[in-house]
Image: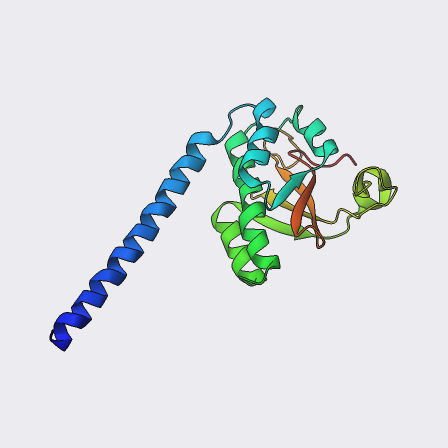
Length: 185
């Protein structure tokens, strides 16, 4: 077998392997889009079925989710997916914080990590018990939010998405504590 033929054969095998990988990714994306829920009553089960390896909803999150005011459920699902995939890649050091932030921005979100005046004024809301039933609390100073343009009222819960979360190092999972609305102030 000639060297040129052998090199061309290897190139074709690599190309086939890359195309197969791209096809698997497209199938996964298509399946994700098909299974995305349209009603709040279906979101918690969808999250459990889709992301239980990397993400957990607390009971409080499940409760407030059922009465969410945010109107774009597909965008909410995309935000959850960002946490279950992109944030996990960041904390597992598969990507940098900058790469994670760029991915969020491309998908219409931004990562926020700060203590606000509202958090100081509403200690119970911003310091939920976790693990649930343990008597211990965690401070909620990290969330992702949708990027809104100037036409949106940033105080209108129908157009403002927030997903408050922490990361449990022992479980190696994102713990979602509150969504889809802004925590009470």
